[in-house]
Length: 419
Image 1 (cartoon, rainbow, N blue to C red):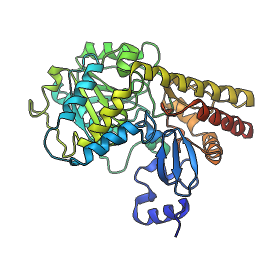
Image 2 (spheres, rainbow, N blue to C red; image 1 turned 90 degrees about the vertical axis):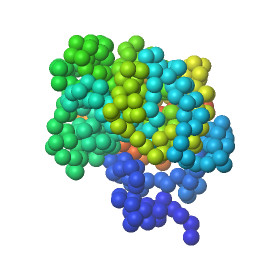
Image 3 (cartoon, rainbow, N blue to C red; image 1 turned 120 degrees about the horizontal axis):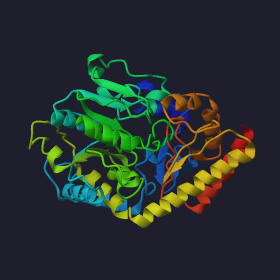
Image 4 (cartoon, rainbow, N blue to C red; image 1 turned 30 degrees about the vertical axis):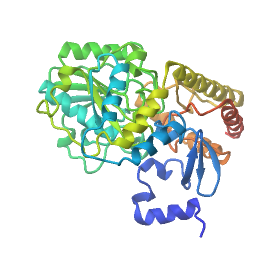
């Protein structure tokens, strides 16, 4: 019996909640049946029915070199034949930590974990342990994973589900979490342990920090003796060689990473100065652990990816993103469609409104107006995959050539005309 997307989704719903292992994959906010990927290569994914798509999901960011890059596959294969998990240190853990700290000024040490959620959760604990304070500040529409204290007013999948939080999260779990509007510097008092921010908000579309916002956070934290945490799970080692701190010239106290550093395998990390990281077990009293932390397959894949991310590679990636964003904007303008296609370096966003939003409230109005779903399916019908939700960014990769960009822009023009 030949699998189809519909038959697999029906079977999946019988044994997996909603038929998916991450909610946005269910197509709930765009409607329809999700495609099931059979394989991927470079800028393409192929579904179980044999259809090829030009892919701008790219696993929501990890596949910065494109899918199944030969160097990454070779590194994984080489690591796998030597064992998949040891519960003991490996050389590659040292090598990838050295690679990361060499790129990010002020980040002396990192702790490897298995996901971005685990990185931010652990970083919050470290900040509280370092400062002896309880309160944290986050921003509406910023998504820092699904740990209890950070899930409130999150972007990404939680916003696409129409939720402001989650059942099962107790009032006590968020009692010390303060939510502020993005792009407004909040009051930071002496009870605040850490201010958590996406330096570029990439989980409510793509919203840039306003001029002075990140600098204002740095100053407010310094004045109150609080720590500043950059959630760079998306921007880290995608935006440029040193991430958002290099891009904006603002240095946080704690960094969180994911996606790119795993080369497509599950890995996250958090890092800080010698002094702050000295509070982490086994050196200090802040406990954090993980059976699969520093997994040998993930570190091998991550190292292979990072070694390809040179200054020239970032220039190339930004050029690809520029051609895509400018071409999309031109197509919408020609069709008379109210749309904004923001671009920050190699990151691209899409809003079906007359002006770009600056915070979660203004992003939500646009993301929930229903236009994105029509555009999404129009593009899918033409063999172009975007994230099945308006709150996500667009991820061009180094594997997207002029031919794929041109094919994409032809499709954008056709769908824009239909809108």
